[in-house]
Image (cartoon, rainbow, N blue to C red):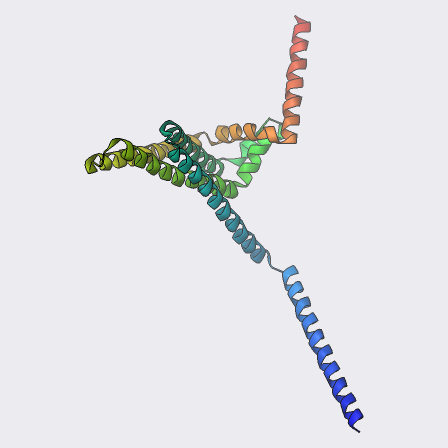
Length: 244
């Protein structure tokens, strides 16, 4: 009798375990089903979140890298090199900010027509304008703003180096150097961005074509177009020489 009761208990336990397993498998299947059947809006939101995270991490890496370079230059007492780095950071910040502005303000129709005529650089420029949101985020927000912030840090390091070397603890001189360098960097950055912004908007097509031609070097299809154009020019030149 005891054995029969034990068998019944074992059967009940086995049934409970099988029910639990079936429930777990049904939950996992449901989760997989939900993942596979996400709406386009949900997928878009997820992609946007992951993209923002990648941009944030990349900005963190860039900021850390250039801050480290600035610190190294300050430690080596290379004021000229630090000043050159500061100017380069400002120029890069201005230039990439202009790329983001040009990409968002450029009309796509002329680039489409040029790409259909196989003009070198037009295909790359067209892709950039079609993805102007990403281009603006990377160029204006990531590179432009990050380099702008790092240039401020570099300016601070230069100011501190000058204060230590030349002021002899005079508070008036320290304040004057700090204000002068901060004002100069701010004026160059804001003034430069304002000046280039007008050019990027008014000459957006030419600006994007310039970027397209530069980046076209890394594109196989663009290099093929360039090669074809060169061959056509060469053959035309040979025909003209034969006619003469």
